[in-house]
Length: 413
Image (cartoon, rainbow, N blue to C red):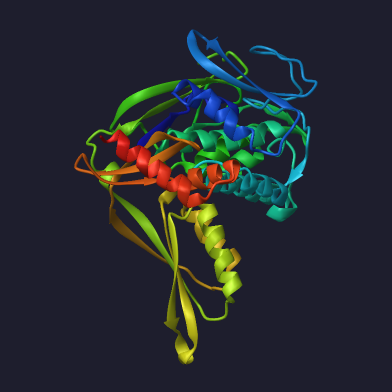
């Protein structure tokens, strides 16, 4: 349902994006409930309203155990929003991905967070001359960045995001203190992350776009450019740690829908990716399908086929949007034996979608409502919500599912 535009006129970081989503209507209680599922300890999320050069914004600050709180401009061992915090827990990619998979984040949030961290690992590996699974995350693997990335992805899912567009990212200048010593701004990982994406000059000095902020936006944004034709419905500002000198140190998030209410809601263009496989086991194919969904594929299917030389095989196919194309394609190569992937852009007619929460005896469940021309044609309980509640309440999945359907029917009168 939601078209989200990120106006990073003064840069972007994970905590700034998280604050902007909270200011734009993300319920703090829902966010905290999602974060509580992460196997992380020793931190607290402090949410407060602050001003940056006259603009009121939400500051979402992750405070680590034993770390003194502080307002804008407080001293820290490096920056996270416009600078890096000191390393608290170094983690490698497999550990972080396992944490995300176990957290039960809503909707597509787990897949988004997984893709963001994989993108970070690829960038760090290029900079340091290693493989992604060997990268020992410092700043981006610390508790605060795991919270920021998972929190932003969960917030986008809870806000019903279908499309995200971002302004070009300002890079800043100067130097930043990291676990590797002083590095030039933009940091090497940021330059790798924005490779192929537009950036812009900015008179503000310092680190404006952090690796965390860059990774989130280059992974999830379908494109970078000016604000699209849209109907703004909610606007949020997220504050960084500093005031800013030339411009307020905030990022702006605009939540709304396409101005014509048409193409974004009821039609779009997606990529069809296909690979022929005649030497993959059933276990490999099943695992690949799950990994593709986690990487951001919209749908995945397997079709039996007869290959060359009369061998039985399978056509692996999936749909993916622009934002997830690169990650999903790389996942096909990594998880299967194929030497090539076919790309075809296809037009897709679809129902305009929104999520409506209903109360059941087991807890609230989101109903995915599909409309065409404003008329409701489908309404289905969200699988993830029903499965989670069934596990928490010791109930059968079908009982929770039917209770949600009944609550929706009662709501319609």
